[in-house]
Length: 307
Image (tube, rainbow, N blue to C red; front, side, top):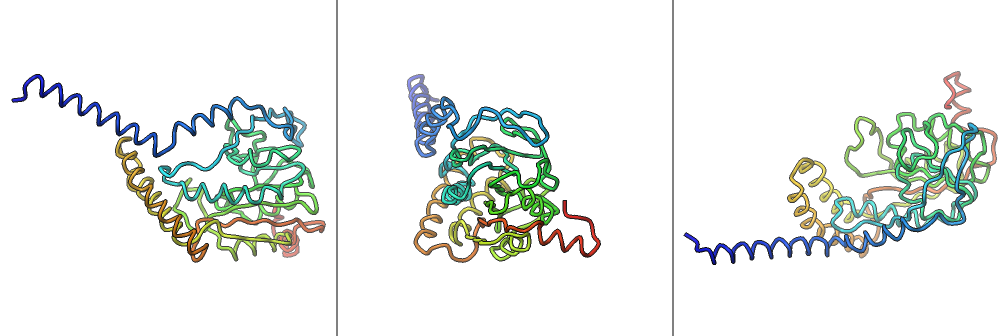
């Protein structure tokens, strides 16, 4: 049997191990710097590019939410590569945004901080959250024709059964010469089921945009094969095989999977964006024509208008 002194020492050792584990977790995941950044961001007022209130075309004033610039997560996030690459892709294309901007399917507005230079930022989603300015359906947008200079549509198209309808609505609410910045997944697991319908290759996304009346269309992958493999390993382990595991086990798995994501991203940086990708990002300009070509085709065949 253990003496009291041995038991006391064992308890001390266990206490030290626990403290060291917590410290290692916080250090690797960079939680403290991230929280400090969040506190600074929460104390920052919206920049001059955003008004204190916005109005929808329905004539109802909608309170604008504080802009929260949000950078990439840390390597212990099981979806870190996907989120980081999407953020970098949006950051690299933020200069295409101008004037009045509609964030279609805005969610928590994770990229609002990249568009502080626009005149007005309006977030629309199908359900209310603390960040939504206008509640509406992307298949029937509650705005007049030519209301916006820019539309951002991030990871939304795969969740809409009538994708052509959404593209026709985006075309309608954009001014001629206005820009669409959109992202869509090519390689990703099922999510937000049962409302998960499509995946888009570079060629499918370009075809969708061109047929919907957009020109100067550019479609680029967010990453290459190695980053895709590493990301799918990490998110599959956590989200598929450990969705209900104890928090301590999930933390341990995230720590073990962090090097997998780091190695995958490093290999991707060496060999380039070759092979499969997680997501594709599109930039296109609305053509100066009266209506969406795809919409005219549907009308000409006597079918329901895509609105």
